[in-house]
Length: 317
Image 1 (tube, one colour):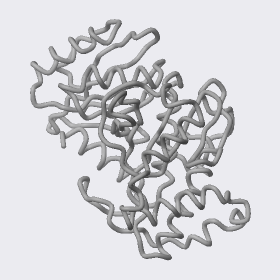
Image 2: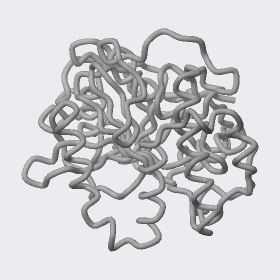
Image 3: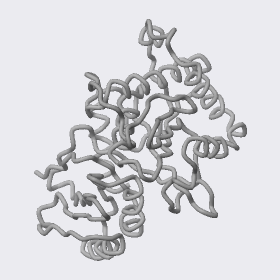
Image 4: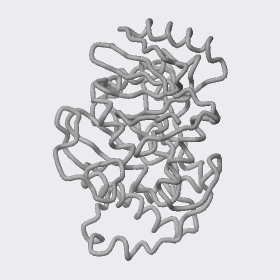
């Protein structure tokens, strides 16, 4: 894994201050948490749909043969919500089971349970959660926390693992800042190590596919010269506009352009200058989820590992 990815994982985990681990350690334990105490009076209000979804996922992960049709279940949910043809179109990896979030221009669901209406693909106005370091809304914090605590309750009862993956099926036109906000909420509410993330795409003849991504730590991050980090960043604007910069002081000139072919050409030229770098930060800016996927595709040969942020910095020195 490139150094920036390692640093981001380590910085995130330090920020969460929960369980000790090395950046490449797989999640193979479940935190011991008094679930009944944390749920408290909320228990009677918890959705039966959320409980059913997370319970079936945990049991299925322990018996993988029962999850062979997981991608079909996801596809059915997407078609019910907004139509899988409205996903971003791209290649990707096979879909692996995980907590599944659907986001259209008008609603958001976790599994098949509606969590919130959306306003043109954005979460409705509301107070921020005091526990959420990224500033996510209290509605999102509460919803994802319920899912994880219900999952933890079931995992502890059956001595199984808590799911470690979150999948986002997001309508292509939805603002990419919504995806980042939801991913932070999912990450910050999970007990223990934050989950891994995948964005679902329409693979055309290949069917439903997944594009993995990471997140910047909630407060951004700082790197030292000895870390040998470039911190390459593409900020998305409107109408396929972009701006390229980097945290490393040797990358002094910002580049800008319009169109994904031009972005791909810039990425190829930068790779020649920095052949040992493989991580790209996509600052979602004014872009849509479709724009994020197109930027991923433009850079995938040179910079296959993608970190998403909405304006958080990488500080040098």
